[in-house]
Image (tube, rainbow, N blue to C red; front, top):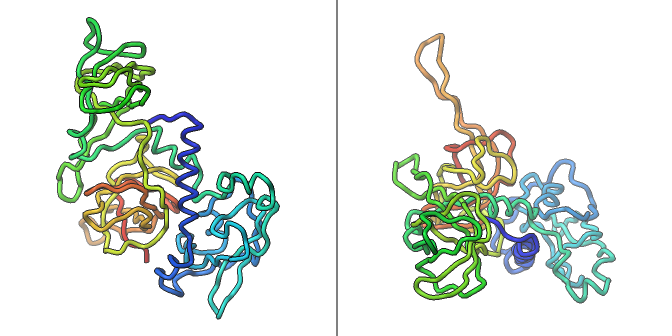
Length: 351
C-alpha cells in the first residue's frame, strides 16, 4: 500500500524512535542475565555513523543482535540516554563482570540547537525505513475474519461497471471524513495453513487509491490513482496502516513452532528485509517484537544405496522479528538471512 514519502518517513521515525525509547533500565531486568554472547571481533569502541541501524550496531557487538537490550547500559549523565545519535562513541565495558555497551562519548549532535529543539528526528532507527516500506507499499495479507469488516465499493457514479483514476465511486462500511484516503484492494488467492489446511486469510492485491469526497452511507470517493479497474465488492483499507510502535526484541514467552505461509511482494526466495506472513499469531502467544529463528525445510532425496526417500535435516536459515499480529497470523521482518528462505520453512523459538 502506498504512502507519500514524507508521511511514510514520519511514521517510520515514530516506529523507530518508540523502539529505541523503550530501552529503559527497568525493562532490562526482564531479560535473563548471561544470555548475550559477545562477538569474537567486537570492538572496544564504535562511532555511530549516519545510516546505521540499531540492529546493525548490535551485530557489531553481539553474535545475536536481538540481545541488544540486555547489554545496553544507560548513562544517566547523557542527555536523552535512551537514544543513539550519529557521532556518539559506543564503548564495550564490563560492569561486575557483565558486558555492557554504553555511550562512552556523546557526539556533537547532542549539543546542537537542532538536537535540543527536535531531539528525536536524527536518532538511530531500529531498522532501515525501506524495510517497513516494503510492507506498506507492496501488498497485504488480509486475515480471514477481517475481510467482512472492511468497507467496500458499492457502485460507480454514472454508467460504469468498473472504475479507474478520475472516476467517482460510492462506498459503504465507513464513517471516514472528507480528505481521508483509502487503498482499494481486490481479494486475491486464498491463504491456507499448510499444517491444518484451514483458511487463514487472503492475498490482497492493491488496485488503486481514493480520497473521500463526502461522508455518509453510502459515502462518495474520488479515485486518484489506479493500477487496475475497481469493481463492485472490492475492499478498502486505510493508507495509514496502524503498526504497533514498540519494536522491542525478545524471545517469545510461549513455545512457537510454525511456518512461513506467504511473502509480501510475491518473491519466491526470501532474503533480508523481506516481509513474511507466518501461521502463528496472538492466539499462539506471539507478540510484537518477538524474535524467531527460521529453519529451512530439509529436502527429500533418494537413497540410492538402501532405497527409499530420506528427508535431510532442517538447516538454520535466518532471523525474523514480528511487527504485527492477528489472532492466527503475524507479519515478520527478516532481519538476517544466512541461507535462502522459502514459504513453508519453519519459524521457531531462538536457541
